[in-house]
Image (cartoon, rainbow, N blue to C red; front, side, top):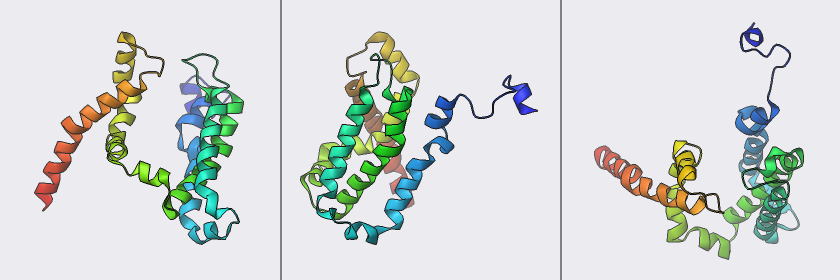
Length: 180
């Protein structure tokens, strides 16, 4: 009945790009990778290359993202719009992300020190605002005024930091005072 109503009587999970990139069903492999990372902590110390897990995970992560970019046909296209990019995104990338996170949790490295720096902690605090800004009307409006080669990445971070300090942090601080 629902498929007749929505005008798509022949298919259930379409369009496949939407299902794979925007629903839990499509993203579930990424969740399971995180569950595996959290559920089997003793496993990670038994693998033979555990000493280099941060380096392997970080290098594999960066290289996989770079290769996914090869499938990008223009600067407004995404490499994950193509089946090769999707395979890399859903199969190869989670493997390297799990290795990288395991290394960051278990080893003292320069990367771990960098990620705990004040600038990176600020970006982490502003990351929720960044998430909301980059998928919303704000991003579309900014693109209509200015579109930098980095797809307004830095500009969106500046807007996100302003939102964090102007909105998110004051509410958080107010709530903490009220609760204590």
